[in-house]
Structures are given as C-alpha cells and as structure tokens.
Picture 1 (cartoon, one colour):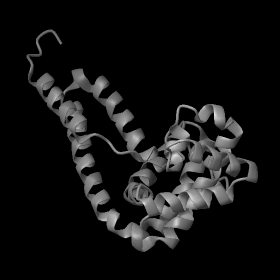
Picture 2 (cartoon, helix red, strand yellow):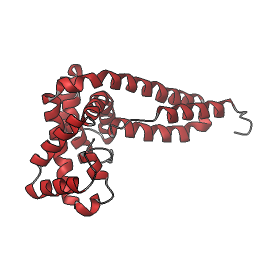
Picture 3 (spheres, one colour):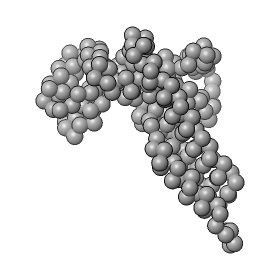
Picture 4 (cartoon, rainbow, N blue to C red):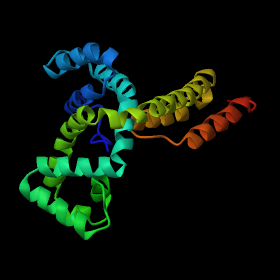
Length: 227
C-alpha cells in the first residue's frame, strides 16, 4: 500500500515528502504538535540530518497503526475497488488507460498486485510509476476521510500488533545493551526492522523477531572467555 516502502532516510527531500504524507495518519492528540513541526521543516526550518531522521522514525511509529488499518481496508474487495477507481481517475488519461488494460489482461485485482506483477515494468514506464506513486498519498488522505467508519475496525488490532513488535524490538535492544560482543549485529538488524516498520509501514514477522531474541539470549549465555 505504501508509496514509501523504500526510501533513503538520509535524503532530506525524500524524508520531508514522507513526513508531509504522514500528517493525515497522525493520531488526533499528536496531529497539531507534529503537524506544525512538519510544516516548519517543509517550509525550510533548519534541522540537522540526525534530527530529521529521528523525526521521521517518531512520526512513522505514531502513524503505523492507521496506515496498517487503511492497508487492511484496501485489501477488502470494496477498499481495493475504491482505491483503483480513485487512482485511475487521478492519473493522466494515458496512465489510467494502461492501468485498466493491464488489470483486465491479468488476474490482478489491486493496484499493488499490478505494480508487483512480473510484466509491470514492461507495461508501465518509470514516469508512469512515479505518477502513480505521487497521487497515492493524496488518495489515501481522501479515503481516510471518506471511509473512516470502514477503516475504524482495523485500527485497534493494528495498535495491539505494534505494541507486540515494540516489546520484541525492545527485548533485542536490551540484549545488545547488556552484551557488548553482540551489539553490532543486533543493532544492524534492529535498524533494518525499524526502517521497514516505521518508514516502510510494513508488517514484521513475529516468529522471526522471537527467533532473533532467542538466538541472542543464547549468545549472551555463552562463556565469554577470550571475547
């Protein structure tokens, strides 16, 4: 679902684009405070690269539940059809025609399926894919308002899932802090998990996280002579 499944958080412009796109997903209590800060950054306020990345991760964590709730709604037949209709209407006529032709010529039902299809790179040029990526955040904002009732049932499960992820990630972080000789690999994996979660808006595999925690607990328990 996300138009930001992969972007470079060290790139200022990409990160600002991400932040601006997250404003509609911010929880009500944080919307004004975070929204104003993002507007300041977007308007050119001075901020260090480190602070900008930290802001992106903070905003990504706050918006993750609603992003996942919207993704769950978009996975329903009604949500899938609505996103398709909105995007096809928002892009240029030529891009919309290609999308419709591709959808009817394959078994794809959703926009994500079209974009991930093996033949998609041939059917859609880079500029057309960029056009779709540009309009999707605006479509998401429209759908958040227009389909709030349909999206609402998916929010609490997403919030609960995020809390489970946070506990697993914190367990990994604690192991690294307590065990210097495993810090480098653990922090590398944490960085990858957190970028996928907060910036990409992706789901993680709880079984993988549990396996990582179990593995590094065993590493911590090993004799440390010669380390």
